[in-house]
Image (tube, rainbow over all chains, first blue to last red; front, top):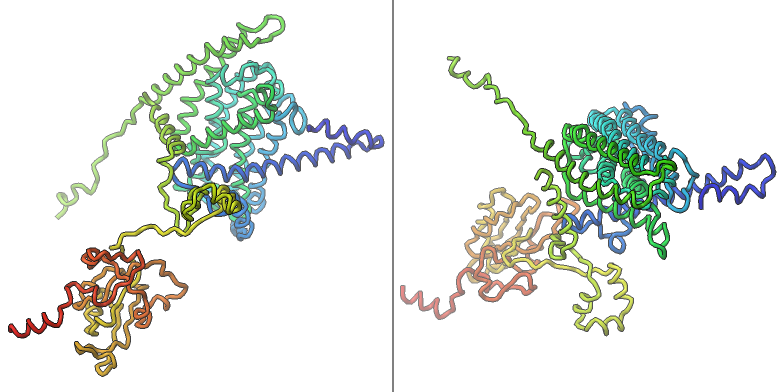
Length: 394
Length: 223
């Protein structure tokens, strides 16, 4: 059920000049549905993540309340709601209070335009990708608002890292998506799904890898979770938050992987496409779950990077690879597409895949060796001024 | 190759997830979940007849909602946060109080007490041990010349008040006599294990065999 269908149900019964009621009701109902479904999914995902993370690390994870600890999210929410909501005396109260909400909303906005069925929830955007990139960037603003509002040095450190990471990783992410746009020939998410006779993850593996890496950085998850850095920054931008504000931050944080994996499914894994007897929504959920599981696997394995490593990785590693990917995809599309209609057949896409896989592996190996072989040159330590103090004295 | 270690790490965590033998390093305490197979095994019936007899229990077990008390088998020499004291062996010499590095044992004896027995021991009026400050070094046990004091093997002694942490003489008298074999490993040779719940009488806990009357008379006659 999409927005158009829903509001057309009402417009027939409404007198002329009152059609806006239909839009309002349909919009409200769909927003309500999207928000609640996403919060419910996130609650289940928090349980799943903690449970699976436990298994990855040879422990059990939450298992005390309900079968297999399934009611754990409920317990968490109850605990957070009943906790005192502390606002520091020196805080900028408006920014401090708004920050959790501003962080939460972009996730819903992205879900609203994702084509999870034949259409998306809230209408088709012909500039879908631009909207998605713009909206996901807002989350960093929320992090900065929270940190600035709470007037805490650790929070500020976290927020500055978040902004630096956003600036760095937005670039390779956008360049990776440019490859998708060039191949699909459209910015609309629905068109991108229909153009994927072969999933773009196979056609341009390099773009997919760059996208997933940049998405990891974008949502501040391990190994790029140095924004929170609980072991070094006391929680980063959430240091001063407590009660349900903290809860909303956590909600947004756990919703981000779901949204990002759904986005990766739409852009690179052919969205709802699949084989006939299974409905498209199930295919979509399955693919999104696979990406989600991969992100979880990464989180369970890799340690946190340092800020300089993160920056170097973005500018020296991902950016050249993303440029290479975009250039090669553009070249291939220019050579392979039908000169008059600009169409790409699935055979063309397979030919691109056959060229791009060796290119991806080779370029990653080269980039890894160029980046990795660099040794850190240290100057020899200057002699301590205290070293010959006894010799001079007396 | 650079970056190969990352893939290796991913393989390690995936193995943790998939290989059953690597799964748990956690021992569930005080209760652990039990599946239908374990339930049937505990009641000594095979699974099918157990399922027919109590299907609700089995369904709950499949859903992971049945848990059983689980006592982790501990070594007999495990020292807990309690003491076993044998009134019959104690002479009230207060060696334990003197040897205690923290000075947390307080003994008040009564020379005219009713507990005067064969060996002319004092009656014990007060025997306070403040286990809130005790470090369970066991020096009092080592100091006791008559093997009257032993480490116990119980734990979970936390209370809501510090004052409740002081073990008094009545509590020492009424506590179950299950000494840890930490200081008397010889007790294990008799087949004694404090974890099994069997109590040990005061005649059996000494480091030496108790001399019989004939042996005592023999010893005195040879002098």
